[in-house]
Image (cartoon, rainbow, N blue to C red; front, top):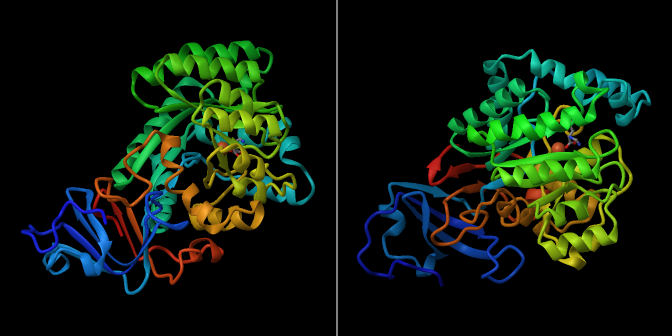
Length: 417
Ligand code: NIG
Ligand code: FE
């Protein structure tokens, strides 16, 4: 029993008490896949979990004296969901391109013909800051409805200094939603149209201008690159990650999504926090990630929406100890969704994760990908980022294809829903 409040001892009122349900704490220090506590009481003070345990052991009067209470009505509370890979800020949509793809054109063909990411670049460049914030806010509010309390948002639809900065500024402004927003510079997402004859010039722009500017203004927490035939070579990505690191930005990498450029091994070698997508990752790439402690961020929404058939080597990640993480990849081209529960469902159905693995991949194991050690589990002393669900079994979070919004959502103890 974890407690810093003595049973029956003097107790001042908690800010919040959750009762009459169960907790999937996702804590490794408790037994079972979900670290479950049945018939739970959770007490929150000053934005942190102050006490968690069985109701029978709870401090007397703790629930009735709390300032705010949630009757879980037999449901479950989980850590707030952590969506560690999104492209939530963008202009326009790609619905017309999707119709083209349904007619037989591939994602790569469309990209090579100047559509795809570049079509979103055109729409994003012409969008004022307020429009970028407004569009992303609508999508974010929907994600909060579904229990997301920490999100990462990437730039990468500007490909020029001014628009990359504007995207990151828009993302930073979204922290007024009440949840935590972590931002990532993805200047090396696609070759800017002005640089088709000068690849090296564009990588120079990313390394010599975007990264230093963004770091100096504190607009990003990490740097990312798209290591792919239609993106950047391993050498180019290595340089971006190195220069980012020199400026204090953590590394991420879009790796091995459409082909094997050994991006997984590059991410591992460069000490990146994660490699993401990974459909074409080799056994040796998975081993390198496991050895380096580099997380495998699975993005089943993109796999599904692009109609891919090659699956990421989940067994190899398990065997080599690379943490399995799940994210929505919310973006207009390859994963138009704002629904974390669909990503959980897809991770299980398409990639073979267990429901507990999928939930760990959006909670405990996703937190370190964004550099957080204060969340992702329900434990005494950690942030009270909590989502309450009207479900009888935590597997229902991934069982329902989408499912219902959360009953209640808290960020650092503050009620958002
Ligand atoms: O994560 N793979 C590259 N980037 C995004 C897709 C961006 C887009 O198509 O707009 C992704 O899937
Ligand atoms: Fe992505």
